[in-house]
Length: 242
Image 1 (cartoon, rainbow, N blue to C red):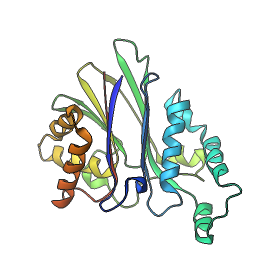
Image 2 (tube, helix red, strand yellow):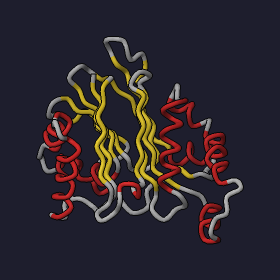
Image 3 (tube, rainbow, N blue to C red):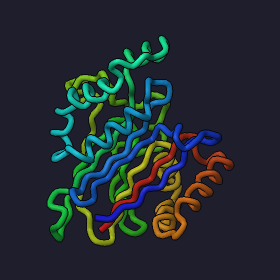
Image 4 (spheres, helix red, strand yellow):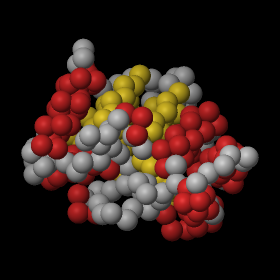
């Protein structure tokens, strides 16, 4: 498997202030993106913790969720013995939150690549073949996005996530297909463009192939923001192909 990741923090924010996170293990066929919820405690740290754990330990996407109590305990242990401002301590007790999207390929050395994914919230996966959109998950309409997406929290219970928040999908990746994993702002833009019979995948493919993709991506996102075509939010794009 091959992949490329491009990202851009909010306007006028430093890169280290970005609350998006991503992780990939191409040899094991594990990929994840997460979007830390602004306003919750250490949201970027929690998002990064989730994707790194998925990268290292996920063998089946839904079984990974059973490890959530251990994931939460490991993250909370980072704060043991640390003196925090009272307001940070209070927010930490309320919990950190993030949207999450994790994808695994089964038998990823075989000619037919089967993928399966889970999502909590509005980070999305798009499966394309040329100009054709084969699948999008978990959001399917730009109007579904709002300011209160489902979130995976540092104090969420497994049963709560499974019962009310978890979405699942699966598919088959061919040699010329693409999987695009992205956080909400870019995902909403893609759905708007697709519903208007425009071709957002051409723009994404150009960025995937670009020699100076990071600079091109930053300029492109800034232009979308300046023209008020995309929300001013952290943006992450992960392209996956064979």
